[in-house]
Image (cartoon, rainbow over all chains, first blue to last red; front, side, top):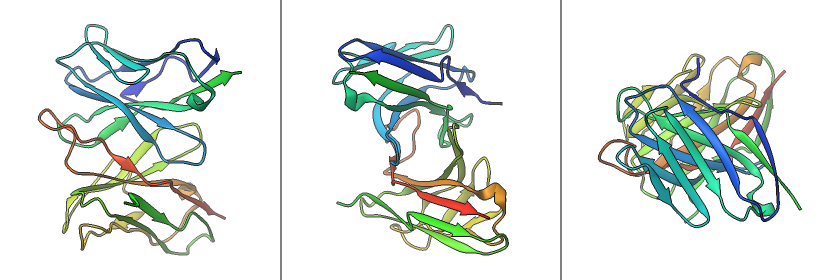
Length: 113
Length: 117
């Protein structure tokens, strides 16, 4: 089965509100995680990454939180804008460390104007 | 830089036909990848390459072949198209791998939408 999963397949938020997208992973040895954004008809676009020696990392309007105890990852988007509407994927390293990423199914974020 | 370029953008094949999906990158990246994305699903790795002349299988390699004769190009070959191969195919590249001592996110092309009827 999937080693990276998501709690919610869809999420609708009001413009200006904060969005939180969650992701669970099963490989306790994973030490690198990435969030990607995929707009309709486009390829995934890198948003932010985090290593297991950190529990929080901030970018521009985005924050990733990592809870290794419960193997949970979240992406927070501040002041959500219509342009944030997309599918968001979390990804983790494969079992062998440097093998390519394992992607979850994705969460669709819809921003209500 | 154009980044990662995939051609064609759309294609319809008949069962049993063959075709090559092209992927080229101009970022001098060592690593290249092919994924497929089925509706409502995440990306599944088909093949990847850590450098010219080196390829390795991913999670779903059956029915596909790849080659990496140059750093820039990483074509994906379907020899006998089957309906199960209807999908959107994404090529990606990165300078290095993703690992404990590196930090090299993958850059994706915009995909090839392939339908097999």
